[in-house]
Image (cartoon, rainbow, N blue to C red; front, side, top):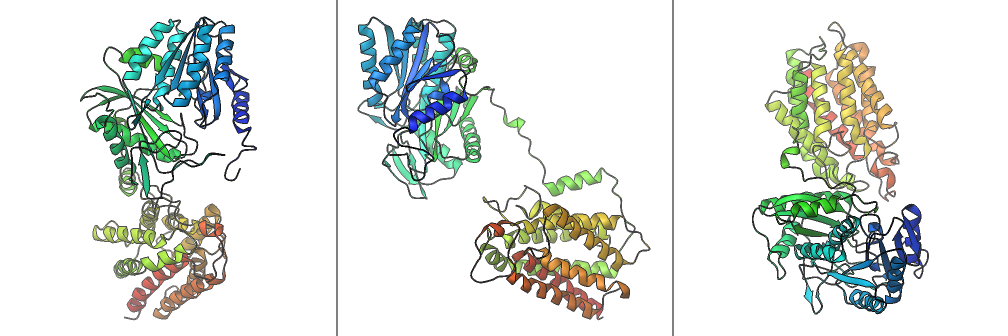
Length: 604
């Protein structure tokens, strides 16, 4: 099947069930019926539906939950004959009563209903409970059944494990069912093997209130961010035609269900936004259950289920939901919802380093720049800031050819912080070790992605930045460490040459970057090598500064002929028009700015 990891459309459901059962020793398989190996309780709880909703319902078979489940073909109700055989099997294994709990869909009602009537002809004590928790669409047979079913079958299974009678189980389950509402929201249709897609959505649209078989929902809307989407969904759930009767200060349980295509990262955001939305509505979120529980094959969407917990039911229902089960898809722990006070907001990483280093005695080198050099450094950094800002767009364009297109943005953020530090006098310009240490922290905390090692300011939603940008933090940190060990009597150009060499070795060691890999190092290494050739004269002339800029420029241009071996660019196809490496180009910009300032200063 194109686009799917299945062997054969006709056997895919059976093979899937075999896989799940072989992976879980508490289960056994009879045809398409998954049965718990544990002792059948007096009241056997059976559920089932079409396949394509995994882990529902196979993942909810086990002690303290379903005694068994029955699966149909993809999005097709199981045949009444299969359901009837399972009922007989449960009776044979010792069940005195049998309770069927199903979703409110025509096929399920007909097939399970027919099987139940056939069982009653044999004097089997059997009943059926239909869950219809959809808050969006109410059609001829009533609202559709959605993920709220899972809460009902867990309550029923726990009660059955306690030895309750069927009438007692049905009574409590009906009360739970009456306090349930679910709303679904999707940014895609479904592409299941052998199935026609019921609807499709453009990339910038979403569907509110669709069913778990791909049925159309209440309305199509422009795609919204998670926070707004969850608010819209809850608006329908609390104020729509089937609104849940709820008021301020009520206690609720929240179930956030991944419909199959949302990433876990997205699900975490949705959970956060859903909790905060309910709290904003002055509701007390007692428990949260989240995960991939009842899917709609690969639909990129989620459903939100709210269970109102009236005071007279809250403790009973929560205890039942938290009762142990060996069903593999039910959460092992359902803990109380944490208060916002449990979320610790950390200070900015630069601020943290300021606070942290203030408490430590850092080895400060005696190596100092004189006042005139410190003033030139101030001017040079201001010039670097301006030129990086002027080149942001070009750097981004260069990076976009084989990367994420945000190298300029990353260097621009570093430039902004350097500018702020100059204004706030946080850069100690006459102490080279302190200066480079601070520049390293700026690279880590402000350049984002793998430009630096921090997570504080992400460059974009994507992985962002190729690996050459990691050298910023590594290089400056190693330079600072080396300079902190330099002695005051040492010659400055010697100390800087050795420190820069240490910085390059650190990058090569940690980032596994070598000359010729088409990276920032391909401009930096020739520049450092040039500085090392001037050690004998112990100072830089105006001409030396100009030549340093030209060395960096030539080295940058030579990266056009190199093939990227590191970073994201190494995974992309070669481009027809050779371009310079954006990181090397940034080095050239920086060294040109510094050289221009110092060349003028040296000529005075």
